[in-house]
Amino acid sequence: MTYRRQKFGLLTLLSILLVSGFLSTSLAGYFVSVSSMRQHIVSTALPLTGDTVYSEIQRDLLRPVFISSLMANDTFLKDWITTGEQDERQISQYLAEIKQEYSTYSSFLVSERTRRYYYGEGVLKQVQEDEPRDTWYFRIRSLDAEYETNVDPDMANEDSLTVFVNHKIHDASGAYLGATGVGLTIDSISELITRYSQTYGYRIYFVDPQGDFVLRGDAIPVEIANLRELEGFEKVAEEVLSQSMSQIRVQRASGLVHINSRFIPELNWHLIVEQAEGPLTQSNYEALLVNLAICASITLIILGLTYISIGAYQRRLSNMFNEERKLRKEVNTLSGLLPICASCKSIRGEEGYWKQEEEYVSEHTEAEFSHGICPKCMEKLYPEIKPPSKDEP
Image (cartoon, rainbow, N blue to C red):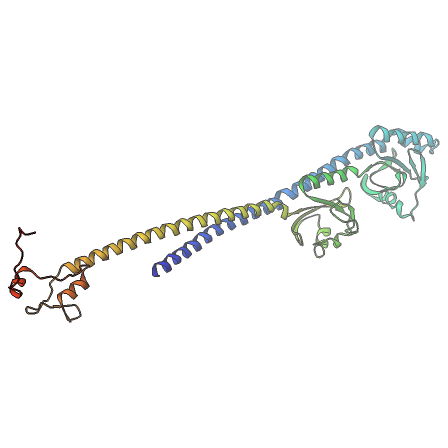
């Protein structure tokens, strides 16, 4: 019973040591890998994605800025305005050719003298200061910069959301003549959002300075109109909208989400890139489970082999002990100085009691007794009986 307790005690201790060692090693590796992955997201992946999207937007905007600058410095355009805007067909044809040659979504001219808005098909309307949709023109007129980029619905194209490059026109003396430029659809930006979302699992969207969504992917429901309504942004939306660049983490029901935001002055939008941590750390978690399964298997194998080895060793010890005890018993029973009575031949045992020879020898050996009479005693006790000779059968 003692051996059994000792064996199970040893197995329990060995189990604790193995499980503790394997578990601590596996968990340490898991947390290190998760921390490394998290650091990669924060310091490399998200900023690099934001920079790439920003660079592609800048690349897409550089070409229309160049086209608008050419138009604003075109001698024909300036002469046509200063000579009184005589032939509308000329300016319409000019704007249509610009649109066709440079593959822009729209091209336009607004004259300061008449406030007419010209496009490829003629006169669209006359801009007015009290019209909210015409505020862009009066804003560009008062700007110190020569051009601006803004996003507005294009009335000439069924109010499609368009990126406009508005460029000032000056005559030779520097007098303000009006504004001209081109418009591009935001389909390229939308395609960029879709491509990055599908390829890398990022969620990319744009919000205006008030937090209203301007462009979004399919991952954000259309019923969510403002950044403050998005899960996790209830307390940090103001921080994101008030800074030109920021990196934050928000907790959602689906897990931890890393967010990188930057303000794009050309569009007057905030570009926000999200990366959920869960999908990236899923492989680490699966690796942890595999490691734990392997460790559990190894632990069971080691415990099984240890149990078998200890059992075999205990059996060997038990057999050796039994043999030694038997041998010792035989030695003890066959050797030693025995107190024996000189008269009756009784032997005094270890307890101090005197026992007959037969009884003592039976207790201390495996010998058994049978009774008979030796020849001398036969002759002495029964002289009338003649013992048989050796020759008689």
